[in-house]
Length: 134
Image (cartoon, helix red, strand yellow):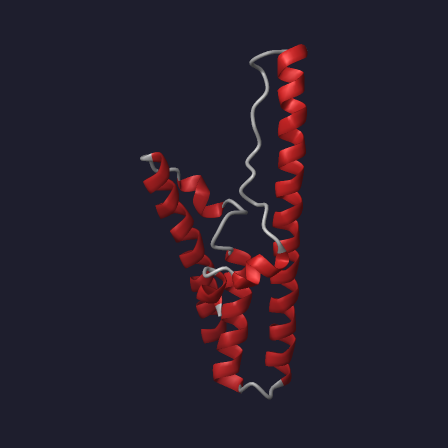
């Protein structure tokens, strides 16, 4: 049960950090950020890293459970980094399309897409926030 509690606490901490950063940036509280996906720190990465670390502490690094959880953590973090990069690339292209449409078809009705997810897989693992999860 401790492993589950630690993992859920890691998720809650990552989400809480997002809320605090959002409050600092926007000067207002939006509690919906707590359950929203995306952004850094990655709550997905936090939960699987906490799971792997907890299993390592409780069962040891030679256990099958740790091997499975470590591989799961690596896959999730690798996919998350790839997804962030793809979303960032698509945001750049969508913003370009929106700008062209705004200028020609329907001014004022289209909005910009966030580009903040444009991060490569290697940069994700080199990023200082990655090490908060390990």
